[in-house]
Structure formats: structure tokens, C-alpha cells
Image 1 (tube, helix red, strand yellow):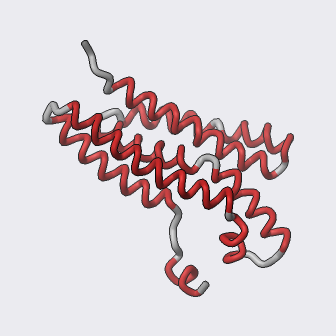
Image 2 (cartoon, rainbow, N blue to C red):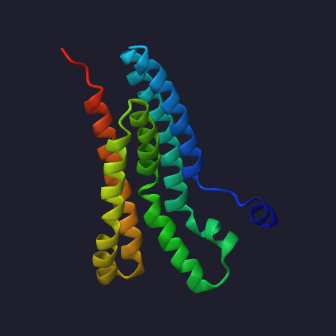
Length: 169
């Protein structure tokens, strides 16, 4: 417990952001050199790596939320609320990892404006979606708004990257 408070352990999003930054440099170098096959191969290898990490985190959050939550909370209501959050967010962790990595890859291709448009549009959609789902499901509706938009962004970013880098005949 003291270790966690002292070092403020961060979430997987910081790890994946770093991975996305590294992929950005790799993609940019190979794209600039005209090595498009390396761009796609590097992206696919990265996608597998972060996808496996994301699935692992998802499984832990969905299947074992209580031991994690009990590190930080001791009141039954806080434990129940935090467990609900971890389970719902757990469904989107793998997609969030793919999203953040793909943003790095698209940025390496020079498509930063496109990344901003997609990110702003779907992150902004969380507000009305949270209001709608929050009214129906309460606090869990807000978590589902966050989770569902992360899932959609992961799918859209990946599809966009694959479409942009598709082999042309």
C-alpha cells in the first residue's frame, strides 16, 4: 500500500502512449524511406503486442476487480462502485490500447489532423452519451459511455490505418 501511494503507479494508458510514440518514429522513418511493407508489418506486430497486453488487462479488470479495488477502498459502497467501474472499463481496455498505438502510427504517416478529428469527435460524444446512458443506468451509464466510445475509436482508428496503408494495384 505504501509503495502504491509513494510511487503513484500509473495505468496501462501511459505504457501504451509510450509504445505509440515509439511506433510513430518507426512508421515515420520507414514511410519516409518508402518502405511501406515495413510500415504495415511494424504496425501489425505492434497491434499484436498491445492487443495481448490490452486483453490481459481486460481479463484482470473483468475477472478480478475486487482485489484491485480493495487496495484503494475499504467502504462497501465505494468498493461496489469501483468494482462496477473496473468491470465496465475492462471491456474497452484492449480497444483503448489499440487506439492509442494507432494514433502514433497514423501520426507517423503525417495524419495528425485526421487523428485529432476522430479523437475530438468521439471523445466529445461521451458527454451526450453519458447524459443519455446516465439517465437510464445511473453511474454505470457514464462508465459505459466512456467504454463504448473507446471501443468505437479503437475500431475506427485501426480501420483508418489499414485503409490508408492498403496495397494499391
